[in-house]
Image (cartoon, rainbow, N blue to C red):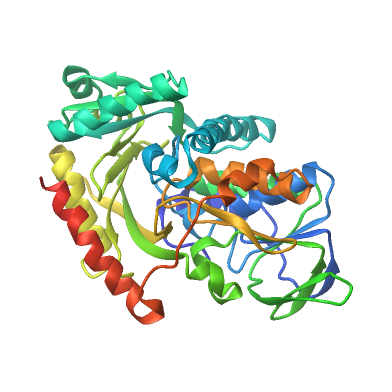
Length: 430
């Protein structure tokens, strides 16, 4: 049986996992109203919100709850979508782009609400910063703050000038930034597991090590979802497997690609030394195309992520290469060991906008969060539950975003992506 990757998240959540009885593998036959595929935040949120509405729900996870991106990520809960509002407006128009922005803000409130309502112990901390390294990036941040206030009436985010940035982040790398107290960061694995546990308390059947092999529709209009040892009979199917869904839905797999990203956790630094690195305890992300992102952990480490692998392999070595990036930001950590190093796949779409919709009647999907999933996946589950309940207006707004297959087919689409990303890597240097 596969367990979680060797990460700080898995190690620090181990005691909670040990206290919970193992979840079963699906065997035999079960009939429910809705079958949810995927035990990340999107799937667990979908199951939870359906259970709140009184549906009989089964959730199938191929590995263990939170095994994929939801349990490994940088865990910064932020507004918006990965492609940015200007691109989003070009895809769906100004009105729908505004509605999606408002839902991304709602996603942050929903996350805090679920944490409180279901007493999820996940180290939530309010506050997030984007930081600029170059004058061009500073100008872009100022333009974004002004645009959000002028066009979206969003006034939570503010500019942070050079002197204040230097007092908040103990690095001479950044010349300006923004701060948003409505955003934040958390322990993503504990959060995902907390959502799953809340869903179980409301009657959801959660099965682990139950990979979906496919589904068919019977003459009675029921869907039959097959695993190696069992079958779910249901009226609705929600596909929330993202980059790990694989051959279950080939049409969806062509619209996303898994991009590797990597994180390290230092040794315990102690409260005083860790606090000196990021004095307001915010999550921090720079605005390069290949970003660095970092934050403090509850046990006084620095969690630092950066680097991406569009080729799908990790040729440089996660620990050494990511630590080298960390020391460019915080050279004072040269004496600090790295206790954990891990990676995972982020599901990106060609246009970097989220991909929601239906494959056929009663078969729904959400995917393609492109690195903006910590909060957005949660509201995606709520919207999916609304749509299954016959209230699809908000879900359909996302469904109006047009998505193309990655070019090159199965053999060439990843090499084509690697070449295309070279331009953006060069732009970071300008």
